[in-house]
Structure formats: C-alpha cells, structure tokens
Image 1: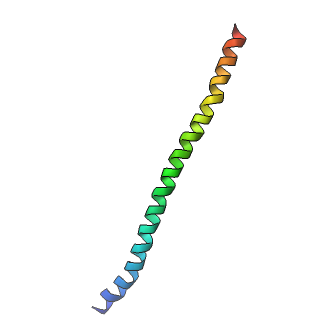
Image 2 (image 1 turned 60 degrees about the horizontal axis):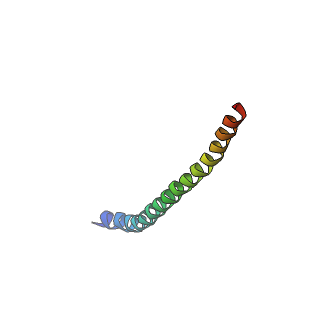
Image 3 (image 1 turned 45 degrees about the vertical axis):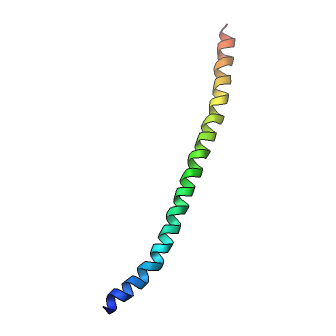
Length: 59
C-alpha cells in the first residue's frame, strides 16, 4: 500500500505535465504544418517565375 501511494504521488504530477506537454506538441505540430504550407507556397512562386523566364528565353 505504501509503495502504491508513493508511486501514484510521482505519477500524478508527471501525468499533468505530460498532458501539458502533449498539448504543446499538438500546438507545435499545427504551427509547423501551417508554416511548411506557407513556405512551400512561397517557394512555388519563384519556381513559377523561373519556369516562365526560362520559357520566355527559349522563344
């Protein structure tokens, strides 16, 4: 019984911290995904310009 009490006193704060950490990870993941979408859109733009310039230079 004593051991169980001691273990649960360690697990409970760890669990609360774990939940906070999990929420933080989810938030970070959402931010990363939106950031990557933004970056990929930003990188697509110059690529299109480059293709158009190459096409114009060929003609």
